[in-house]
Each structure stands twice: as structure tokens, then as C-alpha cells.
Image (cartoon, rainbow, N blue to C red; front, side):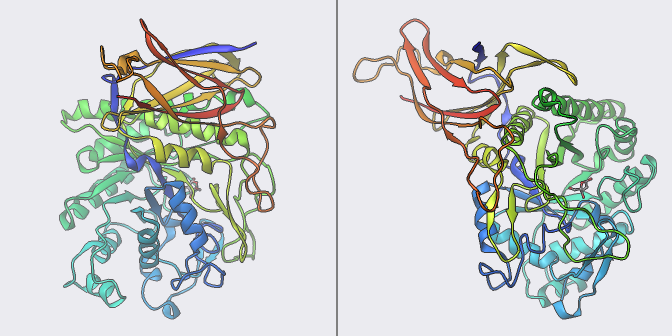
Length: 523
Ligand code: AHR
């Protein structure tokens, strides 16, 4: 059976601008994300700074716009000063979050060098676990103050006279999680975060500050934590964080394919809580959301490696190296659809993480770097989501699943760039067995009465149609076969013109697929 779905669009029905920060990522000192991920001085591709240029090239191709650093759970035990200054003087320490040894040969200055080469905006997290306001102020002074103070002069002495001008700062990480070093009750954390935010703004008033929301929506603290933390410091911060990871649980593929519904509900719940506090405080400000950890976490394809324990405290151990499937890539595409759909509330997002750890890019120490399946929808969405996000009224058949009851088989978002006359539709077919024929009427975009020189009605030309779909949804990319799963041209896409109804885009999406359709208005 073939399913049929439609998307109704209008250029005036906008959610908001596509935000470049939606396409952020995350580099944590965890497992092999930093060491043998982005830096490996002995690697054949390493540059003079020891950075893997093969990875840098893939990061640029991925279209990553901002990168959160240095954690994650790692940050809650991290002393930022350990990672600056002459490398030979830097201490080795136990990283208690990941039971590893941190050599500190890569720190803030190296990260900023890497960020500049990668062309990404930095987002820096301060330690509010074992440390507090003073250390947050210190690292801010080191990073952003013009020379002339003790810590900015230290930065200059380390070879970086110009302030880094880091704008986005996270006030700790997942502070309601019992696993977090120094986790605290909401009222206590809320107060520390608000005081730290106020003090940081005295140093640099243009900062954009992110307070920790609950670690995950499944936390018993979810909702109450956000309310308490925001009641303590609503006017002191700009964003509240949200973290979420999804995977196929117990073979429940049907629910997994629909998890963007959960992300929709999660973002809307955080926004509702923030708006409630706004009402209580009679505040003018509308708080935004930083989804600064999101991804699929994979479910056991390949050997992800196990975290170290006991007397073993290795440097950069191999664990959390999920090998992603074609189906995971379809879900990542759908999560990006959800993030774009909420561009009016999600001001920043970071896929977690960038290299090796739950990552779109994998490396072998001394060997190649390659694109995992989830690389592709991210790269294409980052490259082609431009202009304004449009509201999509979707009509679609539904299917039953355990987690959500009834879900739409079709999900989609569209972006419209009026200057270039370009319309892009990102769509998923969640049906596991059925092809879905998608129709998008385009008359609302066509200039009434406009005619081309040949007398034809003004319409759209198809620029590109690609699909990510595999007959085996569990197909993966590996070092030996890095391009097994790729986006491919979607055949049979048409833009038909009807004198009365205008143009219509029609495309047949195979089962379990993510597709991108790009059009340009031909006038
Ligand atoms: O991204 C891996 C870990 O997941 C992060 O360190 C932590 O913040 C989250 O729980």
C-alpha cells in the first residue's frame, strides 16, 4: 500500500528565522573525543598544533556552527588553569567523571585555536560542581578581558594577546543529576547560578548565559527544578538548558522512529515552565532554550567499548563509541526537524558529541576519520536550512506504536529564503513498510499573474532531491566501508504546473527515510 501525505505552506506563516546556532555540537574531555579525536600530534594529518586536519575538514563539511566545551560531566571536576600555560608544566589528574587520567595537554587555548580553524563559535561551560563564582570569574577574565589584568596578561604570555570574546557560557552541567560531581538541590544551585551570572555580567555585560535545566525530562526533578532555578535567577540568564538522548528500546522500532514527538513535547514543556516563571515575575523577557546535548545514543551496533573502572585510570579510553545505523540517521534528521520547528524558542543546540563519543565523526588512532550515518542529515540540514522556518500544516496517515499511541507517518519542516526564492522541505517517512507520496502545493509562493517569457505560468524548479534510506535500516558505516550509507538522489520527484491551482511538488519517500527537497522560484 502507498501512503499519501500533504504539507500546506505559506511564505507569510513563519515560525522565525533559521538560527545558525541550531547546528552546534559538543566537545567534552570524555573517552576519545579530544585525544585521538580532534587532537593527535603523531597522526599523519596533524598540523603544527597537533590537530587532526582530516577531522577539521569533516567538521567544516558537517556545517557545525558552535561547539560547547569542555563538558559535560567532566566540567564539574575540572580546573581550567590546569589546561593553560607551558604543556610540560601542566598537571595530570584523575578525571572523576569518566574514571580516566586527564593529561591536560589540551585546554582552553588549544580549544580556541581549534575552534578558529574549524570556523565555529565557542560555548564554554564553567565548573559549578567542585568550584564556584570566583573560578568562573577567573576563566572569564582569562578568556575575555583585554590585556592589563593578571589573568588576561597570563593569556597574552601564553601567546594569545587578543581577547577570545566568548559569548555563550553554561553555568555548570546537569546539576540535578546525582551522578554530577557537586550536584545540588534546585534552590541552592539556582542561587549560585544567579549570583555567578550577575558577577560574570559585571565583567562582561554582553554574555549570553545558560542556566542548567533538569538533566533529562525523565528526571524526577524535571519541571520543579526548572521552576525553582528560574525563580532564583530568571532575569539573570538568557537560556535554560535541555538535554536528551534517544535510542531504540527493546526492539521498539515504531516508537523510536517517532521520538521527535517527545522532543517537541520536551521543548514545549520547558518553554511553558519558563513562561510560567515569567508571569510570576512580571518579567518582560522571554527566556530561550539551549538544547545543548541532544542525539541518538545507538543501541549496541558494533562494540562501543566499556568505561574504565577499578585501578585502571587510562588516558582517553575507548568507550561510548556508538556505531550508528541508517535508521539512526533518519531519526537524527527528524530531531533536526523538531529543533527547527521550535526556532522561536530554541536559540542554541549542540549535538552530543562531535567526534568518537556518540558522534557523527569517528576516527581510528593513527588511521582514518570517517562520516557516520548521522553525519549526513546534519550536514545537509545545516547547509540548506536558510531564511525563515515556515509553519507546516501536515496531513498524514498515522500508525500505532507503544510509546506515543498514534503517530503521524509523515513529519516535515520547511525553510524559505525570500531573497533567493529558495524553498527547502525536510521530511521523514516513519512508516517501516510503506512508501509515502508527499505532495506540497506551492501556489502560495507563486507571483499571481507572473508569466515567463515563453508564456508559461511562473513556477518552481527543482534544485536537488536527496533521500537517506537503506533496505536494511541497520546498515552502518565503518572504517572499512565508510560510505555504505549515504544520501542518494531521490528519483521521480516532480513539480507539476496546473493553470488553476499552481505548482505542486510531489515526491515518493521510501519506508524509514529522511529526505531533502530544494526548489527555486523561477521568476
Ligand atoms: O555526552 C555525554 C554525557 O551525557 C555528558 O557528559 C553529560 O552531560 C550527559 O549526561
